[in-house]
Image 1 (cartoon, one colour):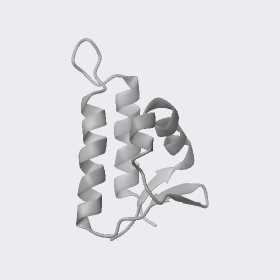
Image 2: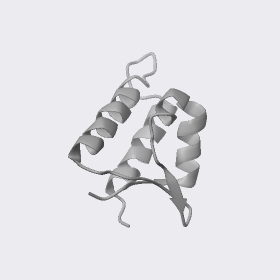
Image 3: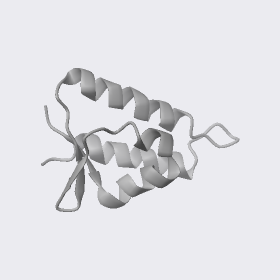
Image 4: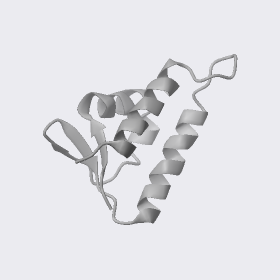
Length: 85
């Protein structure tokens, strides 16, 4: 299983904007400006996928659309989930 990979600035964004989400990321380490979250198996991945999805879904504006923070979190997740090592 490959790691989730966050840009350092995006991981800092999660830390400051979504602190209760940030504390759920375990065993992170930085390498070349990228913060890695190791995935041991599909269960680990599913856990993060579900949790981040919940935070994205709760980041809505009054019109029921993603707010600015929600859009950034969505883009951050897209990078973390699809970036190559």
